[in-house]
Amino acid sequence: MNCFQKITFAAATVIALTSSVKAQEHRFDPPWNNPPESKVMFTVPGIDNVPDLFGDINDPQLVIFFAGNQYMCIDDLLAAFKKEHPQYQRIFAETLPPGILAKQIMGGSLTIGNMRISLKPDVYTAGKNKIEQMPEYFSRTAAYAYNGLAIMVQKGNPKGIKGLKDLGRPDVRVSMPNPAWEGIGKRIEEAYVKAGTETLRKTIMETKVKDSSTYLTQIHHRQSPMRILYNQSDAAPVWYSEVYYQKMIKHPVELIEIPESENISATYVAGQLKNAPHVQAAKDFMDFLVSPAAKAIYRKYGFTTK
Image (cartoon, rainbow, N blue to C red; front, side, top):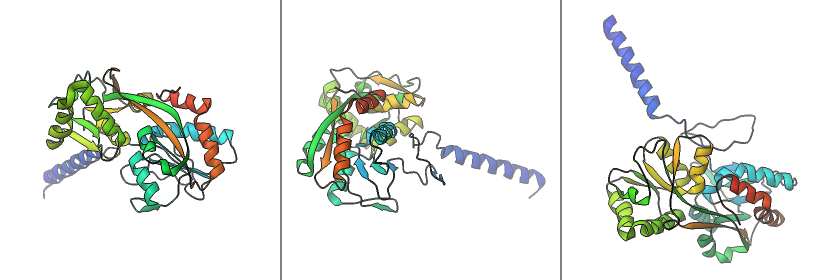
């Protein structure tokens, strides 16, 4: 290999490596919350990153399973609760899809990667419908926050999305929660029918799933924002608070309102487990969730309260 060939080969190698790095960029990856301080901070986006597990997994004094789309509230909620109840400092929380959390409750454990978690929750929060499907598990339930749908699109709205009907267009790539995994998926399907009859729902959820222009997520509150941010999807129907938060943290997205006539509402309900390992802590957290302090935190992040 002569000198010129060596230079050309080296330049090609640099270009290849640069392209590889760009293809694997993680600048928008979660966690979007503030991780707790430790002597060793070792979060590696795309490799070792568990954004939906919060706090102290060792000997917790309170364990809470939150429906995942509340992740943005967790830092403030737990800080306020600890301030009000300083006797509870070791708190562990999960913010996975509520259907997955329900299976974890029923099955007794969950494995993520190589980690198995067998902690039993004291409190479980989810949509009203999910809680009503599991009455035998709870000694007490209470509603505490509400939400509606919106559409998340890329900054500048390059596809000109105006509403749910546009998600049926062949040129619009949709990130859609899988109804088999997440309750929001079924609620969004209701909204499709309200916006454009059963035909729109079938177009988005059957025709476009088959041609891959609709992508079905397993954990929409992480995947849908990332697909929009990395230009893998053009539009994502999500809870209003989710796109509100992405704008709050200055990510390049826009919020498309859905009119009330086509929208649906969600009621968030907390349930205290009958077999809660930390009964008093569970009771105290249930009381806190319906307090003015907790409701103010939910409103800060785009939820509504009564």
